[in-house]
Length: 320
Length: 301
Image (cartoon, rainbow over all chains, first blue to last red; front, top):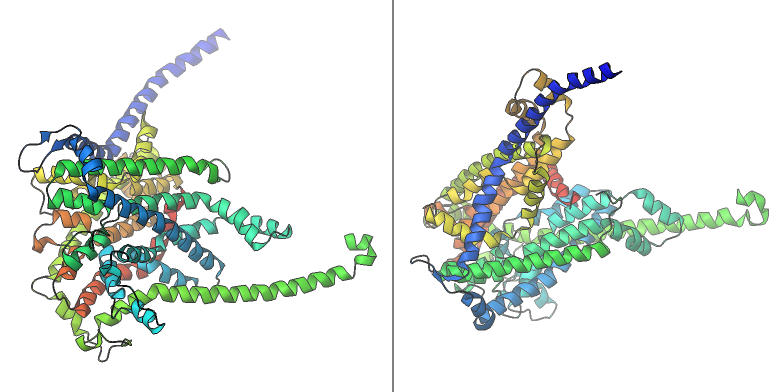
């Protein structure tokens, strides 16, 4: 007994060393394989963010050396820059209106598609295609759609006896026009919802039907909870996207008057303000401070949504 | 069964059920009809702007600013495309080539780097791996606007502003979403093929290139298509980095076209149609990859 035991350990021991070396070799290989991402992450994310944090405490116009000014950029932002508040207001209004609107429309379209049995491919394509249209081309197109005199929207309103608004020429209507336009691009979210709907087991609905649950009850008690992880995902991503709106507002406002955020700064999104400070006025220090504040805002919103998700997002098996 | 026990109720029950079912079937048909009415209405609404764009692009000048609108241009003026795309001030031919060069640089970089990184995360064990993976997924939430300025400063310092390099080079260092998708695909592959190749003495790179990549074409196609689309449509970074007119991408070109004084609307629409045509054609040919790629996004939210 004693003998066999020790011989067993004897046999094992020489085998252990190569395993150790194999482990270390494997770890080395792992770090070689993931090196591109690690290097890129440090080079293009960590270092730039560190630099911009430093710059946010300086005054810098690119041409001369940065000059340390402490918290001046931040105090200027919160006390002396009306454009900061204006851009925050525009961005928040856009986000609060367009994000839920997009969620509702994309979920509604996905539910309709989920019920259909014929020509599903056609309808799916029709809803999805607008979302792959480049934001620049979409902006150019919707300017024409919202043309106050010859655009189809005001044409339709006119034939109904309504005097249509001036849309992109009117500070009160430019932002609503951008919101309507953003709903046109919900195809991606719709596809994600559709995949989520297809993933709900039919047996749940059948069981509820046997129990006599109405259609509305089934929607509220089965569809919504089962879909809540997908809703959470879409909500988070479109929130982050909405806070960074740039393309359409930039293309439309600069084309109309050459002025970023026109008319009367009614479409001065946060990122447009940042762009203007950084690249038109070369206030790189101030623009860096703006970028950090935006980063903190988005981070806070993401954390809040994430926290709240514990009370409304339902994970079917806990494992996922 | 219950009807056997209580014969008094045996008769009305089936009748009630039958009439309920008839009601239900009629209700179902009505509901189905409503679904198609709504689908038709909304798909019309979603397609109308595109129709409006195309019909405007083909109109002679005189038929644009009229109401009621001319739905089908007469004559159909295909020449608008030639005029719009050969404007000497905005040479769109050049812009298409520029965009394709950037596409090639970004696509090759992203495919190669993301495949390597994804293989590491999928198949190799090492201390710190799960931490790195979590960190990588966290960057998906990072607003790109936050690093816009410092990245610009970085590329400005090394003299790359004005060239395609600031757009292409970062793509050679992986991208979290693509890495994640490829890794998921690799994890689902059976290990036996790799074992066989390992026994034959192949090293990891050889296994990756000869065994794994050939059977991973579905996921690589998804990455290719989504990357191609995003690069084609990207506006802000090309606007920042491509300061010379001869370097513009199509997106920047269309934006400048839009900003010109007294621009002709039919020509502007023609340029926009030309811009989205490659993406729409790509979508038509690779619809499945598009739909799968987008749907995959939501699965592991």
